Image 1: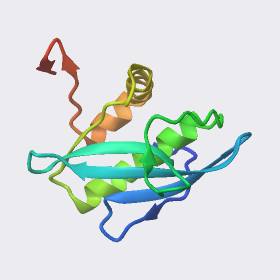
Image 2: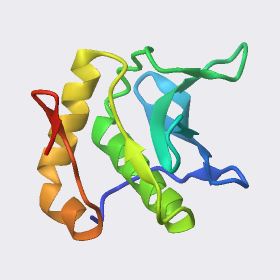
Image 3: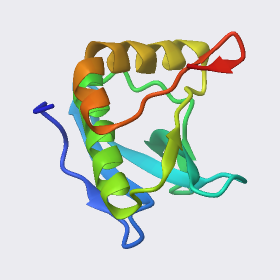
Image 4: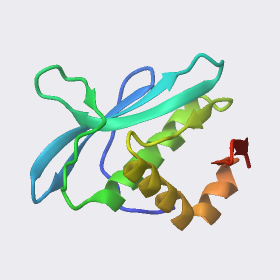
Length: 130
């Protein structure tokens, strides 16, 4: 997948990444975080705007910066960097809203053939993993 993406700044642990979205609404700082779940080697992928006040992630903000594909490509690249460091990790992805989950599903669907060359992809359907 050779897509236009933003440059990433990785934390030393490679669990957190920062980048800047640039578009008609200005420059917006973004965060990507891989959070260990209660299950060993399963990480939740969290993504959102970096808040100015607390410098924490707001995963419900809507930027409307007209760069969705570039942001998704940047997140995909962060997944590659993370899995190179943690090859036995599994990543769980779900949007903070139904609309965001659908956006992620569409992005995965668009590049499904490329994704399955490097990853085992599972989806939850009718309470079963397929």
